Length: 403
Image 1 (cartoon, helix red, strand yellow):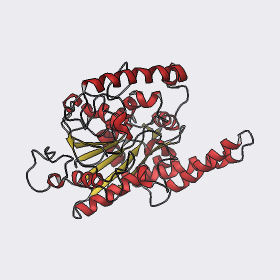
Image 2 (cartoon, one colour; image 1 turned 90 degrees about the vertical axis):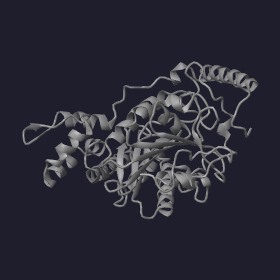
Image 3 (cartoon, rainbow, N blue to C red; image 1 turned 180 degrees about the vertical axis):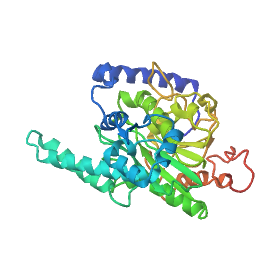
Image 4 (spheres, rainbow, N blue to C red; image 1 turned 90 degrees about the horizontal axis):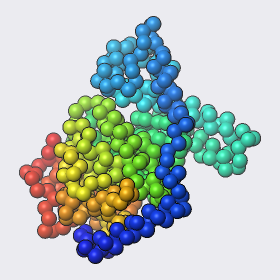
């Protein structure tokens, strides 16, 4: 199937298929697969609770979930020694605190990653663990050591479960434009970076986009965030077919965006299930978010771009060989994610994804999808290449780059 539009007969077929999928999922996994287990306390939450009960010079510390502006003022009032003292005492809290100075968060997360690495080093020698458990501990220890390197800029980190993490490429404090990559299913600490098929992982995506933006506009100071700081669905099961993970992810995404320094425009690049996260987050995005670009999207929990209730421009891309085009684009009983973002009726600006090579190749160097993302990220909207000759995805833009 290569057409972006659907016939009524095809919609009926997809509805029946969607119901069949629901039945099979519930019959094989049960409703328990949809429920979240909330009994385990996140190490980050424990750190934030410790912060709430802490003090500095006899004075209570500000609420860690307070406004980023208030927290920024608090940290600005401290001496370098006081900042370092709080960072050493509460590394996971400071490292995940929206409003804390960016460089301080990087330093705090290096400490937190090193502590998590030491925990895994002890697990390796725990005789109570199975062989699989020992292997998992080794992998996590190696990954934490890699992420804690002096050249890494870790913006967020939580070792709970499969782990959550976010990393910055470029100078976030001085960036004139900021891009955020929001990945999809099976994203966690261990899959955050890959050597094989590296551009299918968040680090590879973000690095590739950062390089492409620099090539597109060398004089524009950009920063790119690989944002995997939400619990993504594992595999293509019930979690991936519902918005449960996206609901929590959207809250976390908006909190991160509101804590970014400066006022530079922000563009979101949402891949696969990440576009569900961005769709749920859209109505509450801060005003500095100028663009939402989705790639390989199963839907954005909306029937049209206008239903997202966002001021941001909505862009969409899909490679002709992407299997995602065959999913049922609808929502039935909470399963499914709504209309196809590249369909003419949705109303997004559809850009070319030539040479993207399937579902995970949108950030591969040399692809038109990556080139288009870079033009959007640097505000060079007139240079974007549209998917169809008869549809001008650049409508409304005058010549030159846009701030």
